[in-house]
Length: 486
Image 1 (tube, rainbow, N blue to C red):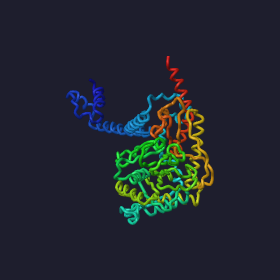
Image 2 (cartoon, helix red, strand yellow):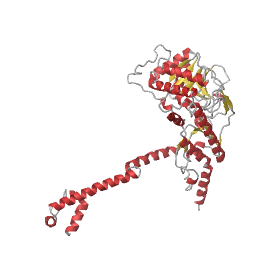
Image 3 (cartoon, helix red, strand yellow):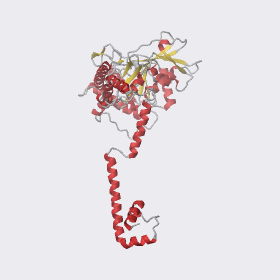
Image 4 (cartoon, rainbow, N blue to C red):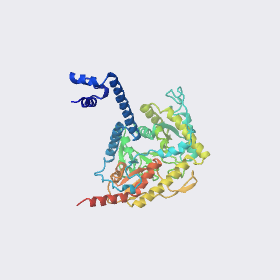
C-alpha cells in the first residue's frame, strides 16, 4: 500500500485527527509515514479537518431549520398525524382515495381534518381579542385562599360578586326570572346536572328514579346519568316513549341540543319533575320571547360568553330544599367551586353587560355573535343546497325582545341529515375529513349528524367550502375507480 492511499484510507476510517486511536499500523509503514509528514504538518491537517467538521454540522442544522423541522420533529409529526388519521378512520368501513385533482374541488385539497364534533366556542375569540384588557383581572397570591366565599349564604362557595353579575345579566337580556330564586354555582352545567339528579332522587327510594328526555336529546345525558351506576337514578331513554309508572325526572333542553328547536315537556303523566337546561337560551342563538320562569333552570358561561375553559355554570332554583341538596352534592363532589374562575367570570359578565349598555363598533357581545351566527347559517344553507346530498331543519322567525327584531333561530349546532341511500352520515363525512357526531348518540338514526357552528372562522369556511363541493369529490372518486378497473 502506498503512503498516500494508506493515509487517506486511515483518515476516512478513523475520522480525521482521531485516526491513531485504537488503530494498529505496521512499524515499517508508520516510519515511512513520519518521513514524509512532520508533527507540524499533522497539527495543521488536524485543525483543517475539525474546522471542516464544524462547518458541516452548522450547515446541516441550518438546512434542517430552513426546511421547517428536524428529523425528530418529523417523526413526532408523523406519529401525531398517524394517530389523528387512525381516529378519523375508526367508524368508516373503507376510506376512498382522494382524487388527484381535489385541489380544484376545495382550496385546501381536502387534506385538512375539520373536527366539528365538540361545541368548542372558539368563534368568540375575535370579540374578546378586540376588547383588549377590559376583561383582565389580577388576583393577588393572598386572595381567595379560604374554602368559603360567604359562610352565611345557602351556597357558601358562591362568590357574591359573581352572583350579582348573574342577576344583572339576566335582567339585561330578559331571558330568565331571578326573583325568588337561589343561585347555585357549579363547575360547568355538567356538575349542576349531576347535583340536580342527586337533589331530586330520595335516598331511601325502593328503586332508582327514571331520567328521560325527548329524542334527539343531548348525547351526554345518558353517559353522565349512568356513569357512576347510582342507585338513586337511572337513564330511561326517550321521553316520548316513556310509560313506566312512578316518579320521574324529565330534562327539557330549550333550545334543544342537537336540533335547535324550542322545547316543552312531552311526558303526559303526573309524578314528574322538570329540569330546564337553558344553556342556549341567549339572543345569538334564538329569539328571546320572554323571561324563562321554571323551578330549576341551568345556564353556563361556555355558551353565553364563549369561555368554555372557565368551567363555570349556575342554576336558578326555586325550592330551597332542592337548592340545599344541590349545594351538598357540590360540597361532597369538589368541596365548592374555584373562586378564581368565579372572579374571572364575574369580570367577563361585567364586560358583557357594559357592551350591551355602551355598544362599541362591534356592538354588544350578543350583537357580534348573532351577526356571526346569521352569516354562518346562510353559508351553511347555501352549501347544503349546492351539494344536493343533505337537509337541514327549517325554523320559523320569532320576535326577540332583546335585539328588537324578528329572526329565525340560528342554533349553535347544525342537525344535518344525509339523503338516501347514505345510512351512516358520520362515516360519509369522515371519509371527507369532516369529523361530526352521529345521530345514534342522540337516540335517533345514524343518518343524522350534529355539527358545531362555533369553531374559528378559518375552520368553518373550509368546512362549508368542502361540504358544498362534496358531490364533485365523490364524482371524481367514482370516475377514477371506474377508470382504474380493466
